[in-house]
Image (cartoon, rainbow, N blue to C red; front, side, top):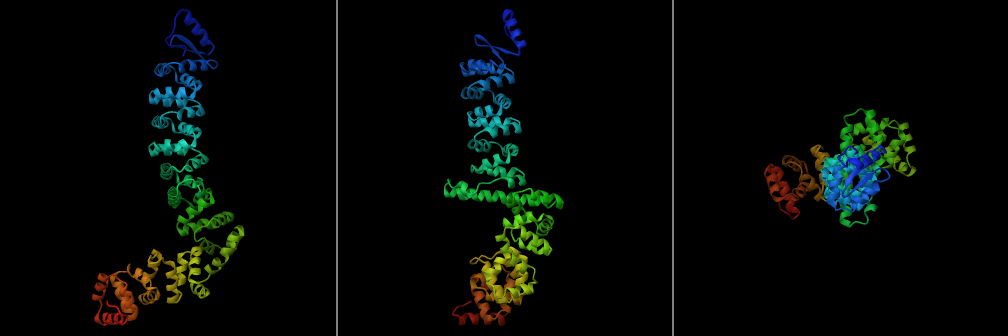
Length: 463
């Protein structure tokens, strides 16, 4: 800055001569400092020996380039003290103008609140450059102190490897920011910590982290699936195919079954095989819809062990419900439920509709945990004709039948009790809460209610 107000006379001549050689000259304290590529260090040393505020006053008179030059040559601790004493926006501008490696070393020495402000005041791309150079264990604290949108902008500028490194630090707030603000495809492409990576954490924290990771990936998969529903097949397939196989499985699992089937029928066979190898939910139902030769080609591209597990479900899935029911006549209830994991609920309930009521009851019972009734089981039972519904419920263990009945409307229960043999109806009625049982029985004709009461008395109970 040779045009700044400075010395006159001989000193001015000296200044001009130096300026002609590309120097920068400042009046600092009692002496003149010449700042150029060879002399910036001496200027930095001179400023570093002054009281902080005095050196800050001198830095404020310099151009941004020259101040950056001097601070870069100053030792990190001295530079950080002077940066911290500068107005915040000036501090941010100077760090943004320095080499990112040097700037990062000075940034981490600033008070946390100031460092957060500095990163927030820089252009996002430049702040992200600094974050690349900052030790990973400091990054979450800086991001967590920012507004979510700003933190997301910086995260968006990071490489996948760097982002994955940040996520491995188990910073819950940062992970939530990633989940909320980054594009779903970006979240799914990241390498999230495996359980082994969190072994050093207390058990409660490990479990919390596992839930956070699962929630983040599931949420991103739902977001991406919703976005893909509105784009052409070719684009949707390209976007899903670009994901790691495990992430692609999460997205395909969230797609409408028809859309997922369309995409898988168009995709390259090795890619489809990769999804099946990575545990695509109910994957065999998609193979069933493919031409046999394509399905066989997909199986041939899979790992032999996984492919061997799918041959039987694929063969059964190609049968009609009646033939499948006959094929499974001697299979255990657990075996049939396991087939559902390959072929889907629609296949299971179509097959159950062709089975005897006692067999249906055994399989439905296997799908229940104690008295918890899965929503699909409840819907299936409610859709049965009343006579078949009554027989299936009669074959269920009493506690599980009561759990199903608890979710039926009062009129539907009255129809069931009218349809059932009295001894079965008495067991069902006995499992109801007293108030509801009285309300339902009071609405039955006497010729239906009395046999139920008699059957209950014969069992040693009263209704």
